Amino acid sequence: MKKKMNKEILIKYLNNNCTDKEFEELASWLENEVATDAGKYWSYDYWKIFEADLKKKDEKKYSALLDKIHHEINLKHRKNSDIKVINFSKIAKWLSRAAAILFIPLLGVVFYLLSNNNLQMNKFTDLSFAVDSLEVIAPPGSRTVVQLSDGTEVNLNYGSKIKYPQYFTGDTREITLSGEAYFDVAHNPEKPFIVKTGKLNVKALGTEFNVNAYPDDDIIATTLVEGKVIIEKILPDKKIEQIGAMVPDQHLTYHSKTGKISSNQVNVENYIAWKEGKLVFDNTPILGVTEKLSRMFNVEFHVADDVKDLTYTVTFADDPLYLILDLMTETTPITYRRFPRKKLDDGTFSKQIIKIERRQ
Image 1: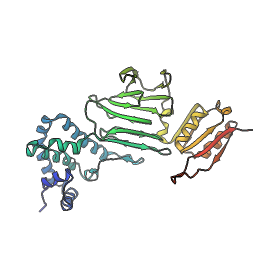
Image 2 (image 1 turned 180 degrees about the horizontal axis):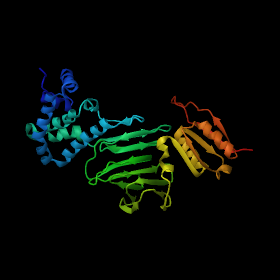
Image 3 (image 1 turned 90 degrees about the vertical axis):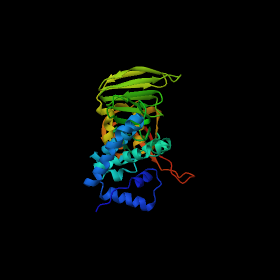
Image 4 (image 1 turned 120 degrees about the vertical axis):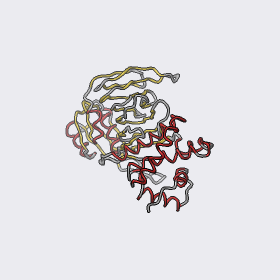
């Protein structure tokens, strides 16, 4: 006869105080019996009993719980295996066994909140649903993809990072970006999605767009692929001034030093090709070329003044650095020299330096 799940063990596990033996019992049940008819009936029965009461008592906590469940569903059904998706949920390995397991985190919370006359509600909320700040970094030379708890997918370009809460609460979904990222935002008209760059906010409900906001650049650029976004400027007194709304295929540039804003219709593929490992240059000055190569290959360029007027129109697709440099020397009057990395006092090595000069 199959063993019925002990709800007390489940509650202890969710509060991180079950014994090794109790954890093994819980793991065995999740592994072998949660997808059985008995396991599904057990989960669903308690869901029907307590779900309405929990929603009535605290709408925000209820929404946070559903966000967590939806996050696990999104991860379970994600089929794109070409790029690794970062998953921060420790319990996801159990949730992937069967859809019925998705009731478990909610049931444990329900049991806990409705027991002991809710005397420890605040304590449990702090343990499980605090808005933890997470940070994901794509170091120079690498790209990565992050899936947020609301289903939004973020592609991070070389040398970029985002900060965001593990679960979105309140009336907005806010993240902070340093670098470049492509956003495929899950639609939610009740909770606008806001990308904060320090000088500009990009606000969307559900759409696809690219934001380029490297801290060492003088510009912040947004390219809208589809949908609609609103651009907001952060004033010195921290007040927000709405600049306007963008339409698909529009590229907007904000010059942080002058405050000047410009926009035009573009071929968006030129601005998002980096997701596929491509470098697209369209009459791009050599400093713009070396800047992207530096982030992509984690090297440092020194460009001579007398070649800074050169421009390039070319597309590279997963080509090695020195092939790219050789092609540049064939099309323009430049040459380059490589200098070896130096070992630093802390045991690490400096970036490789590449000097670009006019060919004599």
